[in-house]
Image 1: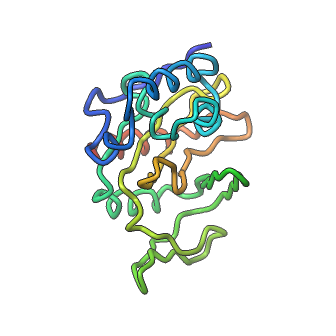
Image 2: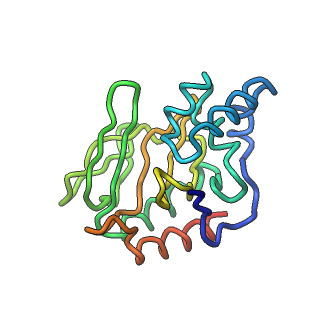
Length: 189
């Protein structure tokens, strides 16, 4: 089953920082495309590992509109908007763990070289904001269902963390958050 992103803007796909990371050679691009073709709605990090490329390189070969990338300078307005969505799903995906936490994003503040997030939420900690080179709005099929997320990407071509639109009890995306996602993506481009 192929799921197309709804109302995806047809704007630029990659900012200069991501372009340097992504599609560095035709061979890497071909490997990313081949691995994506095998499991088009699979986990991006697993597709990247199979192709021996970065997740950024897989995002770069998704169909038009599925990954809209904006510069990291958009962090503040994007974070501020995300912090008003109510409970979201935050995922940190490394080679060793996929950590999923539901809660609201605290406003956050800068101090001591970190972006600090604390508040009345299970989501809290310290982020090395300066490592973020771009932010990707990803709207694609995932295991047969539409998935909408915002990826904060580092210079290694990996997601520092991702913020997902939540699902309801029937596993459908929460429509209010989908509308917020689409509006934020549109205004961030």
